[in-house]
Image (cartoon, rainbow, N blue to C red; front, side, top):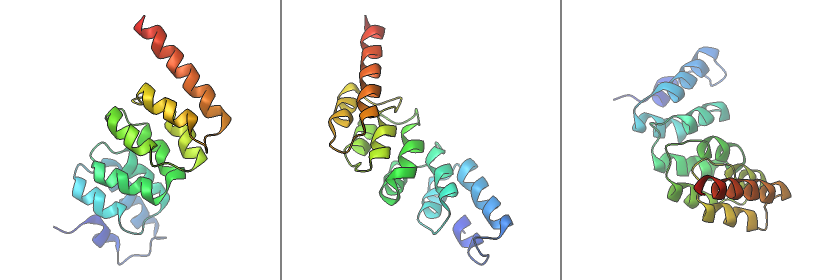
Length: 144
């Protein structure tokens, strides 16, 4: 099977048709292998963000995306509601970029322990502590 990355390879990445094809594939593909191949090829950040949002993207590919660029790819990955709290925790404990730490603190599926870890992180901006305090307070109210 020919992957989309191989299909687009002969064209320059600046070619509008190739970029649109890559964006559509990243957004709508249901094949985890195609998405992984695309994530590991040299594509624009815009394409990588679409891959991060795609529910068909495998955990291995998401890990690769976070390793590629914490600052810009942690946000779309942590916004996903289909990821387990354990996976969000795994991501959170690898973050070093202050913006990525802040974004991860608002991940919908983050467990309270993960939120506390992020708030206590030495690179966390002050807004992270505020976000975590609000979220943990809201969690306590919803349980009561």
